[in-house]
Image 1 (cartoon, helix red, strand yellow):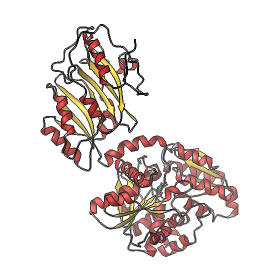
Image 2 (image 1 turned 135 degrees about the vertical axis):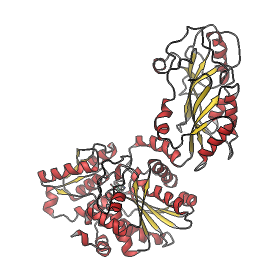
Image 3 (image 1 turned 30 degrees about the vertical axis):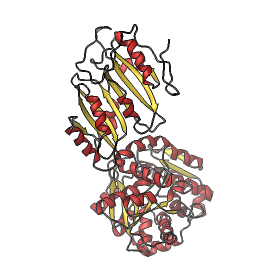
Image 4 (image 1 turned 30 degrees about the horizontal axis):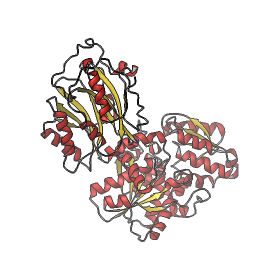
Length: 565
Ligand SMILES: Cc1ncc(COP(=O)(O)O)c(C=O)c1O
């Protein structure tokens, strides 16, 4: 009966586990950057470097290597959100067995492809691991296969426990036995069960801290309730740990051996993925970064210094297209970016004053990471602004500073609606944007580039739209709408040339016409005059014709754009 296995029993199982036919002894490495920042020594156990890019093959192989030959001949089945599936598929290939894998439909394509590459047969079913699990039990019966549980099995647990055995041994080669706590991501609880048993058997003074996503915290809730709690729903960002109900044996072990639990949010995990990258130049998947996010939280809460912590980087199976979201959120998670709604009064020169204020903020000049504006009010401009910051709490200080200088500011840095949606929705048709010409500019992306671009906008013509987001690309791309009465066209065209930035005129772009262009308004030459424009351009001679496309392709920004003939 599994309920009676003690840490010493598990230790024996761990010491005799068979994992190295398929798994590597993964490296234990100091995370120099993070250690310096946190004033504590942080070590990374690099399970992301396993052949299937996660620790999961340890438990799967240990279980399968102990099956009877007839069981292997019939084949195995498992349910998995991806990583266990790869462990099972690889182990089956090594042992010459058939592997049927039931995965939730939400599984990243990368993991599905990896299982197929390893020779596994994939069945997609349900939204979460738990849904897939139900279907796999049915198939197990129908097909007479042996079920390989991803976490609730002593042999699987023992396989995962080999990580801790290596870790304790490897500490010595790093020069010190000191280890204050090990941080472990929890899904169903197999990993932490193995690690906790090994460590508590050998070094009981080392703390074991379990980590879960705040929207997928079945273990934390179950420990509190002292019974297994089934979550109605789980967040899927960290798909590796998205489990609705933990294992029976895993809960028993966690209750007895885990010293504490920490839950982390998506932004903190994105920031932790970046932390891992900064130290290792490797990208881990969200579940693989949970432990790192938790160490940062632990240090902030307990204000520790000089301690040694190990984070198990449990996996690296991340879809490449997720990186965009991760990079976006990492800055906010680290509070390296402030997102602000700034109201700029339409007094003459107020926009320029705002730019100067940004340039003179305490702590040195900031990069403008985002600048979105659409005219909607003749008196006030509401601008969505992103600025680089140097640390926690700074966004509030900047907001206060702006407000004190007459630019009423709302700090949106922690506003989910703003971060996820509103930043993309600044725009729309505006009846006030008459005579608008729309231009796409590019400029080499470097610190201060946008501020320079903004300050080149001499006041004469009104800016009715501005859209910029720093994407970390080679060239910054902005979209600018300016209200240019037809009689000013030639002057405006001349001005575009003097600006020195490549541009493309998009005034006739059909997408612009559908989504942004003023719907109805006075005919050309009967422009609505917006009192006291916010940004204006120098006066000049009256131009003869309407807007045309600039000729220069901004994707090849070798020189300033020219108007086509
Ligand atoms: C990358 C990664 N980290 C952590 C876990 C959590 O492991 P467990 O379900 O054993 O708690 C998983 C589970 O699949 C995983 O894939």
